[in-house]
Image (cartoon, rainbow, N blue to C red; front, side):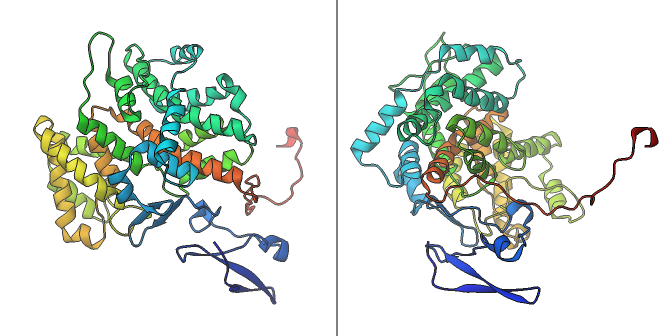
Length: 431
């Protein structure tokens, strides 16, 4: 990031002010308004931060117009093809792809911390069987601040590093235990000889009474999905992590807040909504044409879930990667579930119908990930949990980057007050 001496002139109240222009490494530009209030007594107003940069970051680059996503300069397509999830996590958190020795050390540190304190099982026992796994996930992750309290100071380099290892290690265990609790099955403890993705699938689906055999395609698909979800710039949950973490609260509480933000239907719930939509079409006699027409009708509130993206005005690069493995799995399992056949047909229509093509309403990652999760046997209520598991390295990377920044300060946005002016209190008897 740098400046080229370029400024923007602002005329306000008959006075002229100059604001510096910051230039990113990809040529992206930002007007720095950090001194605007001190200079003019004015603040900027941008509902939802839709056009506001809240930080400078080296972690993730997104170009929605060109359909580009890079982690630390590496194309998402290359990472998905050549790296596994733990390599990608190391890259995001520490800035460079690891050497063989660094990767083995990183994996070893994660393996050493996969177990939960036995006392934490009583937390699960306190939840009703119908508790949503995301609610359990956020609560138990937050409880790590109690059970791992010796790693709560983000200003201490050693505590910060160990908190990162423990958070990465325990998240799959916490997530899988949440699922086991919801279906009344015994918890399956982590097996540290397994890879990160193998271990999670084993904890999710193994039972003590029989041997669990993992499908290699399932392991590969999960690894791919976690990489594709690992970071995506300053989205709602990542911004939440930075906001909460800026107060110097511990990593565990910070990640718990990120989980809560991700749970929202407008953020992490889109892949679940996609499956709900397909179920609705199936229940309506598989009348796909009817719903295509509804989607095209501007007066109809119905929308095709899993198509188009707020950021990408081109094909979502994550969806391109996801499409190949989704197609391979659909070819294997389409005959087992009518929803998979319906999904294939809907995809073909969206990629060929001029209405969708002209509006760039391409299938996005939520469309493909929901289908893949279903093929893997993961229930809908766990979809967002898997999203959180994948996004965890990105959250940690932004938390760490913020604490390493010499310009770190607590986040304290301003507001434009539009309420009553000063009023006198009317005595209770006269109201």
